[in-house]
Amino acid sequence: MTYDGYAAKSGKHPKEVLPMPTTTLTLAPQQKQQLNVHLVQQMKLLQLNILELDQYVQEAVEANPLLEFTRGTADEGWQETDGREYPRSHSTRSRDDEPAPDPLANAARQTETLQQVLLEQLGCQKVTKQERQLACYIIGTLDGNGWWREDVSATAKAFGVTEPAVEAALRLVQQLEPAGVGARNLSQCLELQLPPDAPELVRQLVREGLELLGQNQIPALARKFHTTKQAILAARELICSLDPKPGARYASSGPVAYQREDVRVECTDKGLTVTVYDTWGGKFVLNQEYLDWGKEQGNAQVKAYLKEQLGRARQLQQLLKERQQTLLSVFQALVTHQESFFRLGPGHKQPLKLADLAEETGLAISTVSRALQHKAIGCKWGCFAAGSFLVGEAVSQAAGTVTEERLQQLIRQVIDAEDKHHPLSDQAICEVLEKQGVHTARRTVNKYRVKLGIPGKSGRKVWE
Image (cartoon, rainbow, N blue to C red; front, side, top):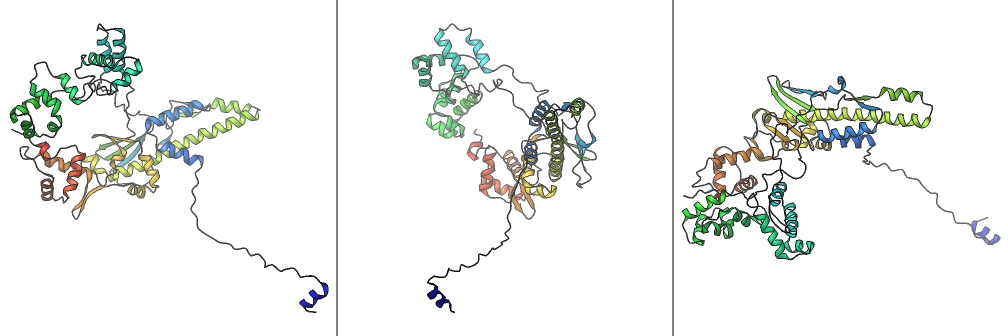
């Protein structure tokens, strides 16, 4: 019987036959990065400088009852090198027992703040209660240069007084020593320091000619004030003897911020020695009394707590060890590339990129970047930020590459040797450098001259 016949006889319609579902497997490559707690803490410790690391370890030891400080001999495991082969002229060591040098140990600084000096003088003045209150506020709001940049009308509104009252209190502060404090701008700061018998030309220059004077436009000033160039030069000499920042000589009212060396590079007869300071390696141990006490406890919660703290203690030791090995590897590679600087001094840095250090150490670029972040390298030439040794190429030529630092040094040398009565233009500096074998463009010279804070041709001219 056919299908159509069955349908006609039964009076029923057959069910629709659906196709069978199919399953397809597809393989596709996919990059996925997972960070566990250990890696996160490892990256965090790596970018800390030595001061931040001290605080971190102190807090970790204080929070963990199984850890305690000791003054015993450091463990040998804390003196590992990175295991790579380097030139024989270099050696690597970890100084555990020797504390990092304090750069402020022999530094002499002003102990009194500007506010303290002014308030002492104000205490000897016969003023009203309102004047004293306004003067104390003005003294307390002076900036680091000794200038007062607050708004007079806003101050008057805040104290419920008139603007002339605020201006009178400001004049009172401006009469105190050092001369120039409380000034509203540079012109007023210099004018407050002028003696009563100062020539009128000097006062005119301070009020109306500072911009041209800063540009060394002596002939233009002589024409503007209808005088001679010699008179302008004599007035400039008096103005240059004044202090535009009378408050900068005093100590800051806030905490003193300073940085200790994280790495020390020393030049010895056997070569360069790289020291990465590790003030905590082997300086804390497990508290054996707590461990023995924990074994005798039958409380499950106590045992679980001590087990957790024991894991954290061992993890901290492992993190510090890994940090030390990474820093040793990175800074050894950096010193190897910049050996000429540590031997010969500033001006001898070589081109260096993060990718070069990553290739040398076998670490990721991000790891190398964190290792250099917030670190300071000390040597006989001074203390430098680790990131300053990453130098780009300013000029690339057949004879070799010239770094940005070296080009800036050459430009400064050319300008120092020029005839100040006939200073060189940027194009002339290019020609002098070309004779020395350094080919560069005029705009490049202009860029680095401005970066060095050196004025242009007219600004360097010495007038007779």
